[in-house]
Length: 341
Image (cartoon, rainbow, N blue to C red; front, top):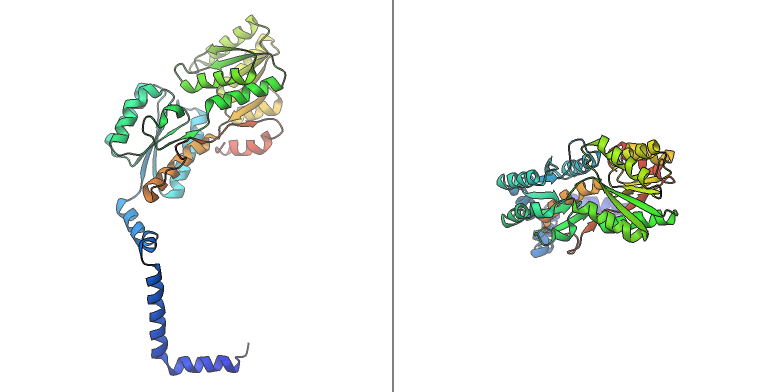
């Protein structure tokens, strides 16, 4: 495009007065820096970045009560490690289903001077001292999954997970809506406070006859045998609530072997549960979106270190429950396959 007379005039002035142009440019830059100085400008600029660089990468230990090969906790681990990659945080995941061993893992992380801890509390009493020692050492702690009622008492910043009683209520209410009259709630981990809360919640939501059955998840044959025996002994049981996706698969097999007409629902998703919902063998799954239980705490600890943020306002950050049924299982199932649901 051809230059106008005005453009040529401005160009000429720039050529004729280069020193004045440089002076005005420097003066404008000085005014801009002055406007950004003061408390607000300094905090949002280089000082924070320098402090973060001086502190180095944040190191977070995630210590759960998951057992080896547990599909649920693999998704939690995926979430924590994804947050580490996204945010430049060093994430170390360890787990042990024995409360005493889990406490030792926490103690080891404290001794190593990690920058943050993420801990599931299936057995809060067993972990109290270890968690409080971490807090006393100046290590911020976020609890996940179980133990939301004890989280603040132990000194944690916040809790991330679903409220187990509310989740149980939703499952019980759904069974009631479907016309079921007698519910069997299967507990697979003795001493896990969250599982008792789920069954108590189911009792409240169901409003009818609810029985509990204790099994051992580490003995799949026993799980199947006990469920089969329960539905054979009491033909009035027309609903079975599993608290774990692996137990759900065993419950389906047990009911079919017993010739019972009871129907199964479960907590948590995996590829087998998705397939069972599609086929009608499982009515629904209570999804607590455990990927978030890995991802969110790591991001919260990063924000706490770098910006002194505390999320939740003293209340747990809920990741569920979300009921997954046949009409939406295809949409959710794709994320199960990639390990994020």
